[in-house]
Length: 507
Image (cartoon, rainbow, N blue to C red; front, side):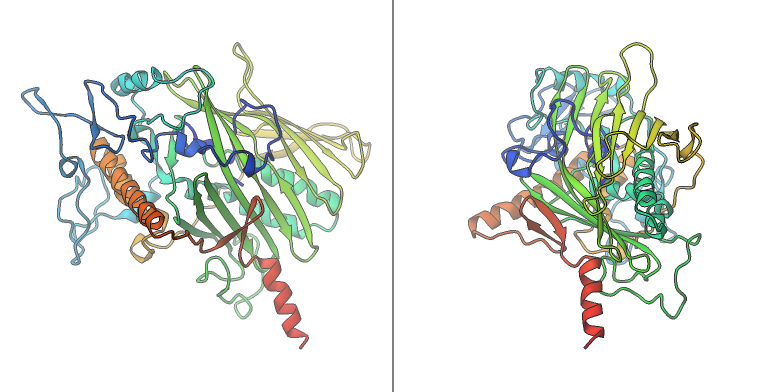
């Protein structure tokens, strides 16, 4: 389903540029690149290197690397090695080049603590004063309504994590998600789906400045899980590991999550979450396209997500709002806009939610207005209003309860559950935190040259692999998701596995 001039909105943000449905098909857009790639990706941008006196082009990659200025004031062009991050940690665990221990977390053996680096959610301020000339030069290349495929933005606007990891923020309140499966009436379940959905957008905003996560490379994977002690399920005997689940080292009483970059052109991300004991899962795929709007950037989301209640064979299909990067010449910030829908084909319940953009003068940010309808009803039985970043209230319209506004959900008064990720040292080479660890270290140290070069190396490897596949007529095989029509589906969803278990138990 669900920090960045573009990708921060990916799930939560999709461009106002178009007035059509948020469920437009992928086939309409396969000739375009997504908003993620249109923002700052060096991929396929070899003709767009910057030629500004305070920047240089790193080779022919389209990656922008600042000039190195010595103490004598003379600027020199760095080699990729000089602009790069410290070399990989040696077999002894000691890095070949030293890190600044004041800026980065260092282990007792002198190696960089990548896990602490990712868990540190503090953010460096985006200095538009020092980098403004680069942004101004980039903006001189675009026109109103132009898509941003070939525009390369500087590395300093990147957020220190992959887009795949960002999607996990949809489950920052896993208790609200799991509670859907506990409710007995379809009406109450629909209300809870809307409550969880509206709580999902604030958690990803860890910075007041809009930044973009890393564009995932093809085949990149992110896995994590959550513990929810407030909602115990089963006991030690029954809470065994789910070996055939998305995170095989997790138990039945944990919410597990996996995301995979399943396509490069267009860049499509797919992700899936499940809780075995609660018999609930969520599956989604998404890609975005963006346009330059003058002083803003708009991003339109393509894709959808589905909540599945396995015991009831019930599905809730959700779409996602448009997103805007505002004030891109000063301090950029994000707002959401547009109408999204939540529908349950089995019960007939549905919801329409408007994400209302802030007027140019006055008004509040982050406002929403929602209506929930019963089967075949033209009048809603619940109205919801408020701010997705704070308090949302609701009232009943059908006379079943007093018609006064009460708290629907206040996202600032409920706990955010911290996701758990296995250590970088134990991860496979294609897992997000391992793929981008040196870029993350460079950004954390505020060393843009090192971060830029590390990003170039990751993307160059992807280009070389794509070239090799093309020469050998090889096809990319996804690992966890498969394409069915215009959707991407997790290969072994919980509902399918439970059906097989039930069938086998009857034999």
